[in-house]
Image (cartoon, rainbow, N blue to C red; front, side, top):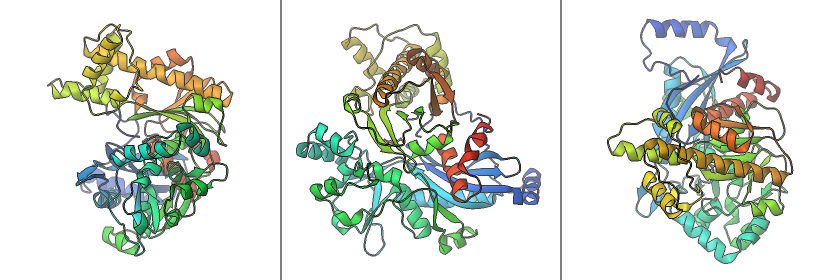
Length: 497
Ligand code: LFR
């Protein structure tokens, strides 16, 4: 779920020692092997906006408890090459192999692997089963150009009616409208599926990722063929949409041999990070409110069926595929990006301030000025405090003078937008909720939590900071038949939340 906003202290992630030597390490390995039959290790690879991580989930079948162990952390920086902003796919593929190797060297006996990423991005495979080009990142300009083209063909309202979704620039459809290799494509594989393909040789087209294309028909849970046809897109690349929580195939022999491990299972999970994280929510309810906090803040409600009514249109809410066959409704807002960019601004000027210190200072400020976080100026790479200062001046509000003032303005403005969106969702689904589940990096931010409770009047139930990795591990364990969904909530509650 993107970068974490606050101090790097991780409550239950255990960073195991990197070297395999030493008395402690040998003792740990001996102990581990003597109780091996009770332990199940799986590797979750979570590729977020600022970095990727390999996290081993170790499930103790006796104690019914789960612990997470980070075995590899690496950059996930897009690369501008010529005209496009690319994913660095071969580099990331190598990092996944390093994560497997580290897991082995640290004494884990990993039985399966699964990869999740943000939504929308994909790679094209040609008729010789090769990747046609490095995948292009959704922050590339072609997304905005694609949206302009789409909006020249249909009105916003018409698009909403056809797709039940907001026409956001990053949706895959816009990228496809400017995909120069589309006719060479034999199939389109969304990023988690692309990793699955090169790890196992098997292809899937997992539902939650497919839905971020804006080309899925939620009533039939199939591609929206009519729309695809009208847009003149190469139909061949849209392969059958698949359900998550199934073993896609075995790790290729050449990769297993290279690392020196068995041909473990490669699992297809709910590949879209935001929805995957919902499996880390300690609730068995069919529907609940959630706030996913990372670089983006996503406010939503878990639902079984698509919602389409006047309020969905009026409040700019979107349907998005969750864990098959859920169709959740939600709204994306710029999130902890505002804090990240503010920190960077002060750090660049020689003030070595960290997130927890920023929050302490924010707590001392009394400034009540607010910004509209949906104003597009706050999305870009600009100098955040200066943008905020301009906004406050333009709107005739009291200026921010200290770091604490900026922090308080950001946190209150985020909370206000979150509260408004919660109210809009309640109107749209015609239901009032007492509580909202929160997960992701924002859980470390007590100021934000306090303001959300104050503005929304809802009680926050804290989920897991590492919500996505937890969801990834739990879905693997369910796919392998080690646990079933009825055990999920108990396991989460036992995770030192
Ligand atoms: C969050 C996220 C959002 C998606 C955005 C772009 O990481 O996946 O859910 O809308 O990134 O894909």
